[in-house]
Every structure is written in structure tokens, then in C-alpha cells.
Length: 288
Image (cartoon, rainbow, N blue to C red; front, side):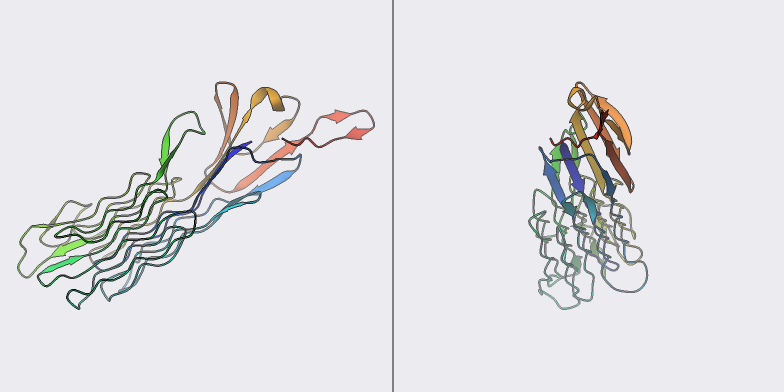
């Protein structure tokens, strides 16, 4: 069977916050499945930091059979807090210290590292973007906060959908507001955009980071000084050739079809059950 498993995205940081890292991306085009009940876990997105300075929460793992897609790391914040490690790393926050690069979090083989943030020797505070499954998160560059790293397109459902994009970093430019700083955008694949604080443009608004899209594993955007964006929840999708499994009873998730294939999508945790047909003298398991 073909199986796609996406972990929950990381939450965005609180003040001048970095974007959350994307949840882990795992795809197996030929996973062996036997007649049994499989527990399917769909990881939730990490919460954006909501009170006082600090980093966003790491997303939760998604699991099907032998496949575990881990959660993305949370974004850092203004106190020089680095992005948190995860499937993809969260973006680094900015810092009160000028010209000090604040590192993004590291990643596993399921994603990419987050970008670094910085407070340059002027009035700008520019955070890093969270890593995505296909690309590293953007680091602060010039007057631009880092954008989230791009996710990965997959057509397991029959339509091309991009999953696991990183969240964008926040941009602030005050005292005085020159209106040249630009907030980071969310990465393709459900990443939330960073907030554009005082004197900055782009992004999702003046205070709050954008949420990662549900069931994509996108990272949450960094906040100005309110709530960081929440990471998007994960997903588990299973596709199989309908005729090859027509003798079996298969249940769980939401069923759709894609030509000759049956697709079962789990947007929340549940059970995927494969029951073999009865034969004289007992029953059997079928490997494929």
C-alpha cells in the first residue's frame, strides 16, 4: 500500500518570534500491510506561544504501522531564543543585542533546519522562518524576515497537495517606524505567515502570527508580541489498488476513490482495520 504520514507543525514564537518548523514528511510507496487492526495517530500542531516571551511548542508525532513522522520545532523569540529542534527546525527569534544571529533549530531526515533571526544595527527586528520538508527556513536578509521553507507535493489522494511548509518569521521596525521591514511568508505546504509589527509590512497583521493549515503539518507564524501562530495538525493517508484488496474488509478514516485506487484519509486519530476473507477451515493473512 502507499502511505503518507505527516507530523504536526511547530508553533510560532511570542515576541518578534520565529516561525514554527514543519511536521515530519514520510512517504512509502510500497508498505507491507497485513490483516489486523492498526492504531493511527494523527499529531496535533504545537501551540503558538501565547503569554510572555518564549518559544512555540513542538508539534506532536503522527504514526501508522512502522512509520513515525515527528513534530516540527517551535519558533524562537526576542530574548535571543533559538528555534527549537524538530522534524524541521523552528526559526530563530531576533535579539536585543544588535548584529547577533539567533540560530534556527536543527532538523531530522524528515525535514530541514530553521533560519536565523537578527536585530541589525538599526531599528529592525527580523526573525527566521521555520524549516520545511523540502527546503531550509529563510534567514533574515537585509530588511526581510525569513520566510518558511517549502513543503513537498504529493498526489496520493489523486490531486497534488503540498504538505509540511514552515512558518514565516515576524518583522518589526519601530522608533521610528520606517515601513521598510517585511515579514516572512509561510512556506508552501500550509505554513502560517509571520506578523508584521509596528513599521513593517506584509505578513498576517500587526500582532499575531498566522496558523499553520490543518492536516498539512505546516508551521505557525511568528508573533509581534501576542500569540504565535499554531502549527497545523498532521495527517495519515493510505492508498491501495481496489481490485487487489476486493476480497478484504477494510475500514477506518474517510474513504474516497482515485481511479483504480481506494484512498482512506485520517485527519484525526483512529483505527485502520484489514479483515481477511474467511476460508474453509479458518482464515488467512495477506501480505502486499
